[in-house]
Image 1 (tube, helix red, strand yellow):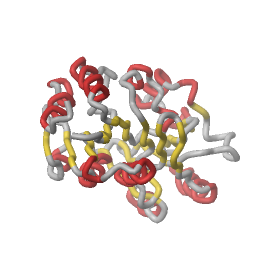
Image 2 (tube, one colour):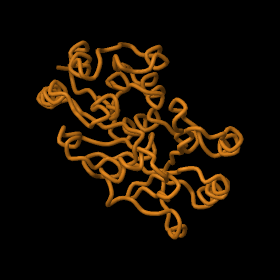
Image 3 (cartoon, helix red, strand yellow):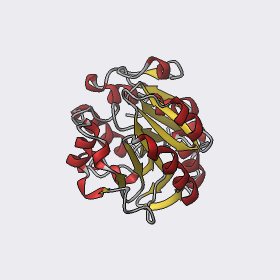
Length: 261
């Protein structure tokens, strides 16, 4: 059937909230490799937050990170969209009076003022998994580098602030817990488009697996969009195929359905 390119979200797709990857998924990746297909991470996480060896051991050919703001193939950087310094400075100036828990996400580091997070569970996850990649925002203003940011909005009134930020960013809501701010007109879909452009991959040979709202654009964009059974109904609505849940062999079954393994 020729070489195909398959793009995978991470959280809720490849592994669960405890970072557990089903054995059937590991087996499926081995079969994909044996069949000569290309596999890519396609995540809202920036590169600094894609470091776990359990994940990377699946053997990806490339990474699309930061909601399409970064693309690499075999470790070679093909594209990177950094938030301009003046835009980032303006963003922080808007956010500062409200003391929101904010993570500036770059390809080298995650910048966060830990005192704004109190007992927030997300900070605990970052400290447990990528402590060596954490840097404070305060004191590093002259060397900040980021391609997107996330804001914890739980229990906070933030519509007015987000309206002001929407001039520079596309805003992705994850329920009422947090939002992602991505540079305008960038998404996982644009990251896939850039990957295919750089590597001369035909659109009809593209597949993607996802589960949440930041997967919506890529599921809609690729030729074959597959949503996990545990995914959101809004994303399932634009899928070409809804596979089973993550822990019910969802990746394996989705790949098998399309004859990729």
